[in-house]
Length: 510
Image 1 (cartoon, rainbow, N blue to C red):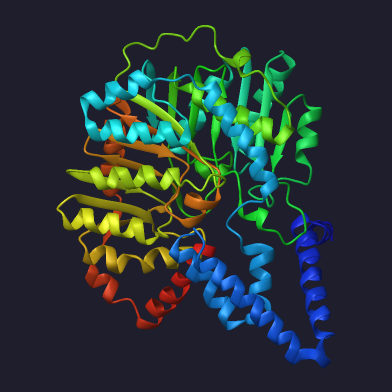
Image 2 (cartoon, rainbow, N blue to C red; image 1 turned 90 degrees about the vertical axis):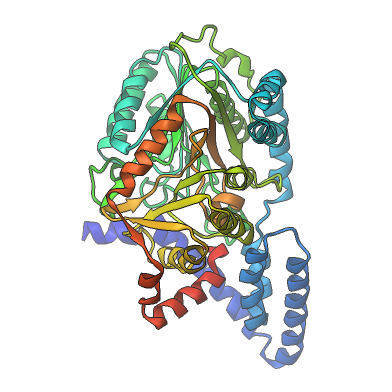
């Protein structure tokens, strides 16, 4: 009985009931126009036509446009209304205006390193161009004097994170999409509480939609009572709104401004294989120590200022001395991406890597929901003789999304792209490694949500010691993965391929 009551009063159920009530009220309201149905139908059809024209002439990607235009044309009474209520890919004006100050403060807090961009360009013009793009459009500069270590599995990231958290003396900043109670979070929480009692400034940001099934309502208030300052990104309310499209998908940990982590690993037990959810969970992260950690610190603080409505002096968090970590090779450029500036930084970074590759491009991604630009880049590189390989999951976390991922195999395979599925379970890592020179490790999936709707982050690496580590892990992953052939794809039942093709039309909405 207790479990039943907990389920009945779970906020997902309550919020779902509230949204269902809104939909029912809308239907009842429309039904009252019964005597005037022809006129009402004409008005809503006209509205839908206006919406279709607005979508067609907007700046959204073509795939996103098609995914909305089809249902609006099929259901003109509800289609246009639903798009206006929930379908906008753009954030509200108020949120955009508020985030403008965040961008300004980001640019002010990150000291110009124009000389480093020039230095990179002197080594390789293409590398210089990629670094300059990130600096000019995301405001995040490149750094030297930074040690990087690739962490190829969640268990290692957890071990290293715990080790570094215990060393904290001044502050701990954590920003995660998903937090779930269990071995991983309970261990970290105990350390956070202990550090807060010692006077360490402990702060946490979590995405409320990402944690809707894993954390109780207003968990932030509980953490505040423990001495942990906490913010929820986009608190989930029972109102149909386009704001729910925008989520904080970043995973950031910063300790004292000199040590930082990012990558695909959330704070939940499946990420460290303490709990088997979709077979063996393959994920990764990057540990950075040194000057480049300042960019991760600024990412966190700008989001904190936005959520709290504060205007803190970032310089007070700048480490007075950065410990020496031995000889650090290469250049490290953390960057952030957001849906507010109409600049798809994450996708452009990926496209630059693919388009400039000479020998190989190796990619790990949990999803393949590709727009025309990404599809063209991958296929063109493979056709030009570049060794393009992609590892995706064998066991799905979301069946319909996995079906859409597989729907892209046909064209990719025909173009010479080699595709592998991670046989032991679920591939959640988001990594690119190119030509033994470049790599990106971060939170950015190859899907529409990550590339256009979410707040994301990553680390661009050039000639660092970690590039070889990422390549080594990728090649070792291939050994336990199954390569998908074109013959195998053709042997998939026709009805499945047709279903996948239909789902693919609506992929941008997933």
